[in-house]
Image: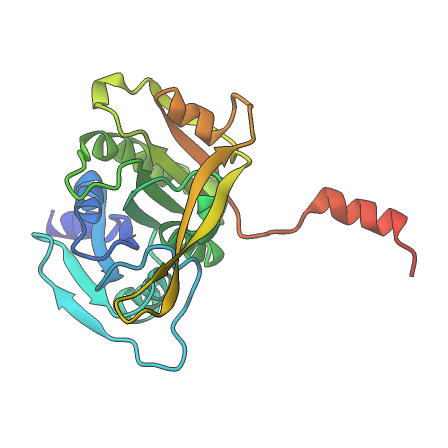
Amino acid sequence: MAKQVKKQKQELPVILVTNDDGISAPGIRALVEAARGLGKIVVVAPDKPQSGMGHAITIGQPLRLQKSTQFEGVEAYSCSGTPVDCVKLAVDKVLHRKPDVCISGVNHGANHSINVIYSGTMSAALEASIESIPSIGFSLLDFSIEADFSAAIKYARIIIEQVLKSRSLDKHLCLNVNIPAIPEKLIKGIRICRQAYAKYEEDFDERKDPHGKKYYWLTGEFVNFDKGKDTDVWALKNNYVSVVPVQFDLTHYQLKQQLETKWKF
């Protein structure tokens, strides 16, 4: 009987949890709660906010890992590096193996459409995907530190369970999940979507510091150019959780074929 119990414990899936808002952010605590009971959870997350870091890695300076007691009953470490650094260090120095799934978030604020390019949350998930680790990035469309994560916890758990059941579907599986910032009872369900063509129309506000020196502050307005009803932006606007399968292969295959046909060298 004891051997059977030991075997069951060994067979629990290993779930790596990370984020870009930092190990103290409420969003990562919500994600840990969403994953409780689904496997052995290990947290490796930045020791400070790293939003907008994209796929940056630390070069030329040391990386440090510190044990953390942020999460009751969960092995956790804070990392001085970026979200991608966290995934790399977790695999090589903490787990000494690839986890069965990597989950990133819950990010404070949207990561739909073009945001996926800049997002540290999604870059951590994509880094795992590169290493053939099924991964999911979660974001809640609420920047507030007092955001209500109850709906995010519910739907994150549903999606994590689905990924754990279908890990053999694609060894590079990576999902970008966004949850609307509305009460849980108003969410209509989950939609599998494509990434909308939308972006920020940016402007740099010119200002002066107290010493009279000029500096610039990035501002802008989010504009959706995509009117399709199968996009993440449409789903979120219509009170659905959006799930977009993403990939790290940036090749434009249709254009590649056209260039091969039309360009002569």
